Amino acid sequence: MEKKDYLRSLSSVNDLIQAVYRSRLMGSNAIPRELVTEASRTVLDGIREAILAARDEMALKEISTDTEELVSLVERVVEEKLQMSFRRVINATGIVIHTNLGRSPLDSSLLDAMAPLLGGYSNLEFDLETGERGSRHSHLSRLIAAVTGAEDGFVVNNNAAAVLVALNTLARGKEVVVSRGELIEIGGSFRIPEIIERGGAKLREVGATNKTHLRDYEAAIGPETALLLKVHPSNYRIMGFFEEVEIKVMAELGRRSGLPVMFDLGSGLLADLAAFGIETEKPVRWYLESGADLVTFSGDKLLGGPQAGFIVGKKEIVERIKKNPMVRALRVGKLTIAALEAMLASYLSAPDPREKIPALRMLTRPLAEIESAARTLADKIRQAVPTAEVMVESDEAFAGGGSLPVHPLPTFVVAVTLPGLAGEELALTLRRAETPVVGRLRAGRLCLDLRTVLLGEDEVIARALAGIRA
Image 1 (cartoon, rainbow, N blue to C red):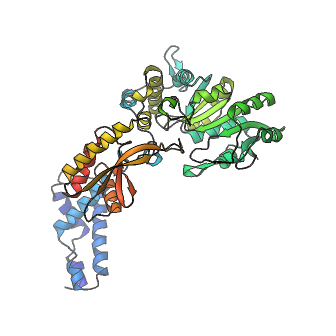
Image 2: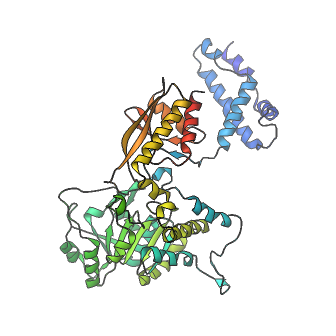
Image 3: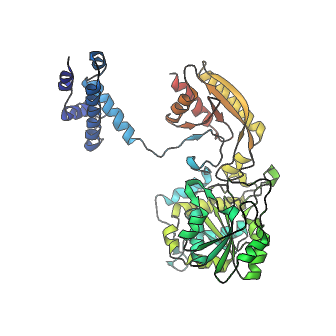
């Protein structure tokens, strides 16, 4: 047969569509015709391209034009298009606050708090006492004050927004004094100089990259100065010959100069983790008690809640920011407020906040418990895939999310090798599983870090590996 004969043997788009609807999967006519039509055209175009690209008769014979096989291809294309893109994954990377995997997981109690709001109305902006319009900020202000020690506080949709609206309110058209060593860039090209510019303020950088002294700030203050800004370095550190001005000293300078002092903390922490050996990060309350007039931080990193940007500090300053018209464009919705309310309440009500904050549990998880979990997973994998080479090894995990960059966390991983399958291939196959599993590669082997694998997920991992060899 020649190419033209293969092309003639192909079903028409209409005939293939009819065959699809006669098939078992599509028999209910529940799938929109437009989707089936698009998938049919995609399959037929692909087959035609393959026929025209075939170099010889042997290559042509490998191309099937059988209608039943084409129907199966169409059904597969339809299933892929109907599959949800935003999916639950298993984080076996060992990075607790993994920005690409949704940062901190939420505790089930937060989900329970959100559930009643999904199917009905709420008092989002309604005062139940007066029967008149209320403020969505009122639901969280009391809790924010209680857990941080701030006079007032509210939230916007993320920390970048919090920094932006604070700068726009406090320093629009004026100068913001920042140390050169703190003009950082973090994930997603978030650069402090550009945020200052977008906020309508003017950057006044002081000091050197590795050393900034109090006298540098003092010399920079002038008639155009509106704000002293300190920025947490996130996952960037200068080691060795380095000096910075502590927030307490900056706050004293601010008071003497009549200028507000703002600290962009980035990944805020509400619990004190010093008892668990994590002393490099101080809780938000510490910075406020040290004299900062305003502190901004994220809700979905070390706090362990949903995405949000907290703005906390002196009441007069916070109230000014609330009145900025930008706040309406940056505000959070009812589900975020419900989750944040439950999260903040857990810091006050739970004897140990780790009970309700999964990220804190993972960060402080005992090493012996991680090793036990790793050995349990290794046994389950050996049972599910007898041909697999499975090893339990010590390793290092990280907090992630720009938090605790110089504080590696000891951990245990399960290193898995399958015969005839390279590590990259195995990793890709697991990412394509019904519940995707994301691990990390080390020396060509797939490593599954148990510090970030949640309870019950080991069974899912073992089933996914078993499916590869089914």
